[in-house]
Length: 286
Image (tube, rainbow, N blue to C red):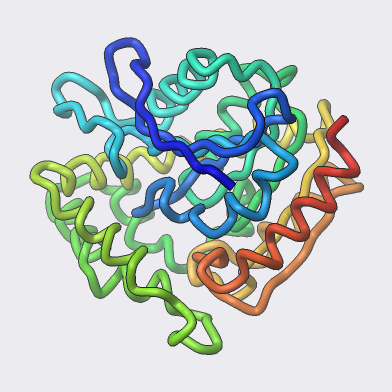
């Protein structure tokens, strides 16, 4: 496998992305979560690249993608989704499957709402779009949504600490020694960039708009019936297994699988997820 690392200009914003596989093969768009970047797919990409054209961008404000100032670019999930939508157009991706994880879910599902004809399949790895999937881990964010005071905003700064990153990577993992420190240390490096803390706090506040959109996303799933594979780290402290099971309510043929791991399931189960994706995509992509 040969991976390529590049940037593309998206309406004046430089978006970094990784790609691999034959560009003429069916495309799979990998969308990362908080606080990570496309490097979280470093073990998954080789699992898919022999059969698919795999593309993994860094979202604005994350990883190697440009981080414009907050007075120039409003850090909302709607704006990020628009950038990624234009990113797919800049790369000539007219139809593609999406792999959505954490923050990648509201971005990917917004793409699906805007262009349902472009989405060939959905793989949701702890990518929630149901209220029952939100655990008590969201309590601090809910406090900020209910009362967007400076005190409640500052209370969320603890979620940007290295200790929280470590927790996200290791909670619910049977053997933490299996989790490489490389990913979380790189995440902490990006979080520590000047101004990034305020960007992340803006997105914490805006996450409420994702929950408000759940009804429309569920209607899209019911009406369009895209092929869905929900593969979940069942010990995720933020997105509970009920969020995976709920997909069957709107897509009865959805495949639901659980792995004995936590939030960042690719850190311990990339081969299993890759194998499940290959079988799923082989069935549904033509």
